[in-house]
Image (tube, rainbow, N blue to C red; front, side, top):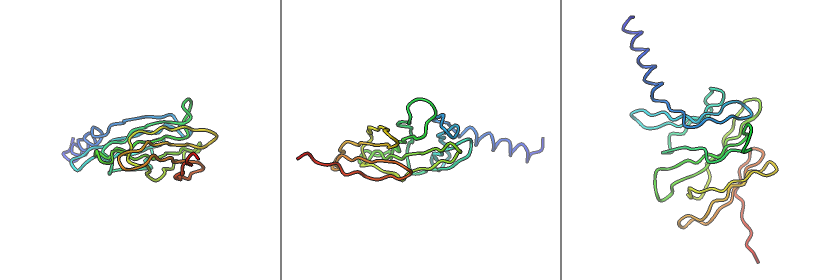
Length: 157
């Protein structure tokens, strides 16, 4: 084996060893993987659908699948928790939508810093309720048809 080939093989092995698949979801568009890649500079969180990368996050300390919808069978939506690594504002969230044809989309990050979400999926609408956190009031967000919006809760009269 030539020194160049040996160096290339060693580099490929090191890259593969630095990858860790944190989660796998069966979706309507194929297998969704949440991959964590660490190097000397930090950690990169990557989403892959059918082996193809479609989203990278190098800002979060940790990314986890918080919920999936529907709860059984191939998923169409996944709610991701994006941990900041801090205690003042520990978490944000993001929705991943997967289409049967293999396309995937991500929502913008959202939240009020609370790391706890209560999510439900009814009639094609994902609703995420977040309790008050610190000075931030409780918040409700909805995701439907590829659009994320903050919902203002009505106060009882």
